Length: 182
Image 1: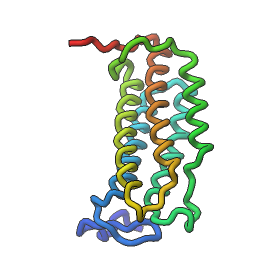
Image 2 (image 1 turned 180 degrees about the vertical axis):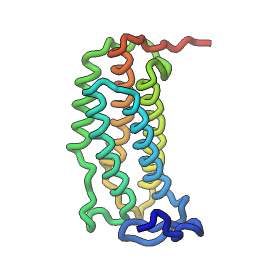
Image 3 (image 1 turned 180 degrees about the horizontal axis):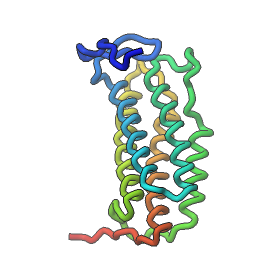
Image 4 (image 1 turned 45 degrees about the horizontal axis):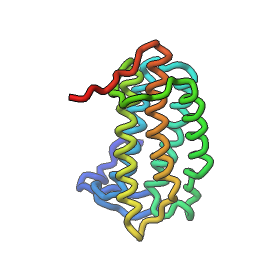
């Protein structure tokens, strides 16, 4: 099977079990940004993250792939593609509590950075926030069927990525850079 199909050469793509839409359709923007987030997480994993964080990020990548498939499906319930649920959100919250509990409390805003792994996790956090905005736009269309947990998942994930970036820095004894007022 060839990688290229030429079916998108006119600026359209097919949804899973659905119609063809323009490549700038809000649904494509949403799952495309989730895909971008997944790629940034792959770069972060290439930076020798601590094993527990690397394992968690790998699990998140699998969930994001499922979330993207859910977004790419006009009727995920009919296709059995509803994979983002309250349990997925609860797993993120448990991870936030676990890793944040080991960190010193924040007393000020911090700048993205530190180790390469932490910097990429901060980048992933910002892409996650953009994905969340794209999904909120998509969910605003009354004809679109989205689980409310998709937005909640992305919201919690951005929080977790912030905590994981701090945890990576802490593991390497690299202090977070405090924001300085101009």
